[in-house]
Image 1: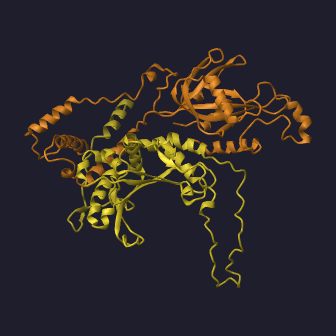
Image 2 (image 1 turned 180 degrees about the vertical axis):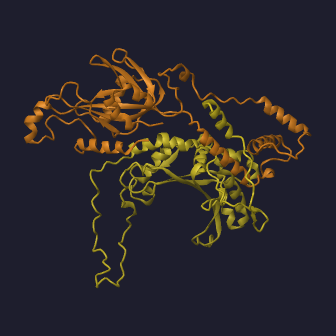
Image 3 (image 1 turned 135 degrees about the horizontal axis):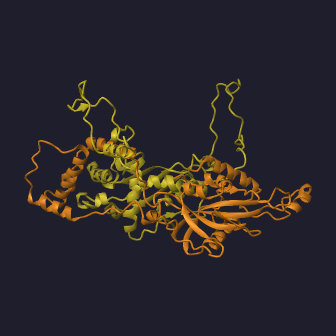
Length: 295
Length: 289
């Protein structure tokens, strides 16, 4: 077979379909009468992801150079604050081992820079609180529909057990006779993988440019502490006003089908950790053209 | 992409900078122990240079390989077969032109995924459907070509060439009588910070008719050019520090008197043009794709 013929054949195989294999064993049926396939079907990527490509071709290298922290030699062992617990010591054998006091969270140094732990986007988490849900929980339905349209996520979507879809947020604490624990108060959805990058692209190209007077994500003043939990968690968070919901093209087509517009909080969760994690996370997020500003 | 050797070479070079907060040129007498003075007076400190790897990032997405296309088509078919039913009545008013149009497009997508249906009577068409089909026919979506004319003409100076690949700027220089391809390069003044010297060197070599951005204050690699004359102790050793930069707009305009030519090249094209020694020093700094 000539090379040209082989190329023609392979390119044809992309679209032409073979005959489906003969079913030798009849399929089982579930309780609703639907056939259960013999294999676990998983839907994987259905198209190349533009922003993921951008990350791997351009951003990752730049971020490695920008966040590289040079260390000569291995790190010294952490300072021993008190005697360590020795279970074989007859004195401490059956005694309680109290934890060291104080918050160590903001003092944890960043892990050594390697080419494997370059900062990357793990997930985008969106949530909103619907105050009217306190009076009647059916008021959550509009927010659930809007979040489904925004994210395209469904529970167990694509046959994945980790897909939780749009979740209902329940209250944890009592707030002065207003909120009781267990009461549904809001809606959230976690985006991962290609859907996360698609959401990022929609946000950057359709929503943020059309928002009136949006200067960018406001950063805390430069004098603020670098040791606060929010500064070392590697998460970039900001909020969108209710008007912004109408700028998402998925919702713009039938905005009047929703009972009202919902504002939302958006968290970009990255793998950055330790001191300076939020700066590394900001460097990553601004690489996807999200603007930042100071007051 | 960038291998671990990049990091390890960088570690080595940062040690060489005597652990300062920024890399500067070492003064003639500083950091030299008394026992070394007699030797170092002769050889002197190494001559520092900064070199800019000016990068044009990919401007269009990568064309998927036949295997990838088959994979995506297969996954899209599974997705289409298993997806939840689409809530038409939520998104469209009954009988609206938008719904008719969506139905036509959806039927086309269905046919593309699973083939022509049978047992369905498609001969009878409503007026609305015909109108929508006519309007769809009038729209001619034109996809832009993925190959630019600069690719066909082999125009190495055009920034639109090889849109899917990372391109790097190379200059053709006359060095000791022979033509040499290398990255833009500049010297370091005494007491000057390396990343300042890099900015200055880029402006001097490539002109100011472009928007560029130097990625980090840290050099991304180091190169020790082999000396031309046979190894003598008195010969001054040379060190080149590489910085990465991006071009955002504009074009380079090198000085005609000092530079013969310039070209925007992929990694593979660079490998065929530069000296083997230089190639060994830079090949791990460049992106394979």
